[in-house]
Length: 160
Image 1 (cartoon, helix red, strand yellow):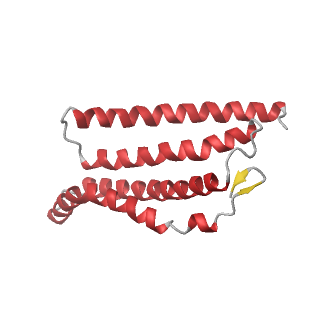
Image 2 (spheres, one colour):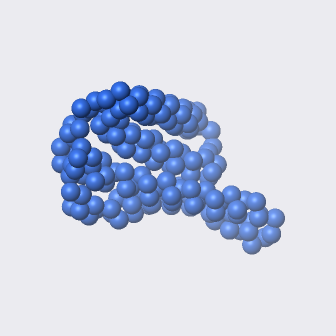
Image 3 (cartoon, helix red, strand yellow):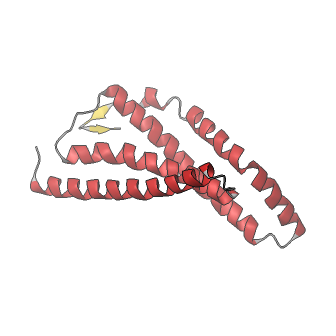
C-alpha cells in the first residue's frame, strides 16, 4: 500500500541515490581518465578511488531496495537477492571504514614527514598502498563469506 507520505519519502530517497551515484561516478571517471592518460596517481588518489567505489556500491545496493519499498514494491527481491545485497553491503561497509582509516593514517604520516623516521615510513607506505587496498577487498570478501548463510531473507519487505 502506497501512501502520499511514502511517495514523498521515495522521491526524496531516489533523488539522493541519483545525486550520490552522479557524484561517485564523476570521481571514478576522473580517476579512470587519469589512469588511461598515463598520469601517475599518488597513494592518496588510490585510497580515494577504492573509497569512492565502495561508496558507489553502497549507495546502489542499500538505496534502491529501500526506495523501491517506499514505492510499494515490497517483495521484489527473492531470498538469494537479499543475501547477495547484504553480503556485498557488508563488504563495502568494511572497505569504506578501512579506506577511511588508511587515508587518515597516510595523511598523518604525510603531515609528520619532516622527521627522517616518518619520511622512511611515508616511502614504505606509498609503495604498499595499492596492494593493501586490493588485499583488503579480498579480506572483506572472505571475512563476510558466512553472512549469506546467516541472513534470513525478506522480513516485512526488507532484507535483514
